[in-house]
Length: 269
Image (cartoon, rainbow, N blue to C red; front, side, top):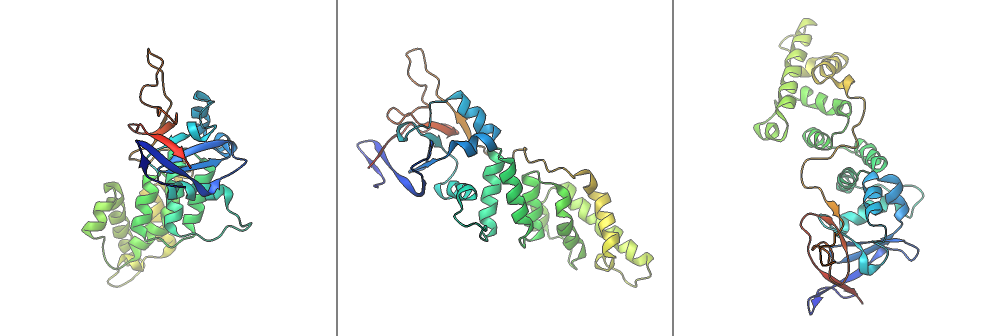
């Protein structure tokens, strides 16, 4: 299939893996059409279920596909991989793969998919600063950050200014308090010239649980939205002349999950 434009008409192509013959909903992402199964979106995402109900006839063909802006073709394919992975045993994927799935599942409210992404990220070796900032951004159960907090308290060097800028002030202050309490705890046990690394692991866990109230974060708030730009489905509304108000392409009829909508005509070869 050809890409580009001709006489003002944007050419699109079918995705090589995720344009399925038996699919029943079509999405238009960048210059690519995906045809997949509506069932996953309706059953697993309250967001998509509500938006589909507003425009039940949209997405039924290439010519009136749902337009997804604010997401790349590659990232949307990564999300679809969760449902359409060809292997019976899920293959190992790198951190960035699961961060993409975490991001989209949070934005579009797929709680089970978000839980899967979190479980996979828990099994990966992630630097403590990055892990804390990521989990804070997506409102993930803070108790899962206990190992990351312990690493920051146990290491010899204090947090750098650059690291501090990445974290929220309550986290910076909490780590500072925990390190000081860990030093006092080690001194009380008779340690000479103690550092926070000399604190007993069990005692340090108690200190961190107290400082960050980790026992009060047992529930993972998976429905919360991260900060930043969030794609939104905007179904077209006819104006007084019966024409769509700029949300629908003059030729393709695409509904856009996006910010300001790009008016584009699409054809496939």
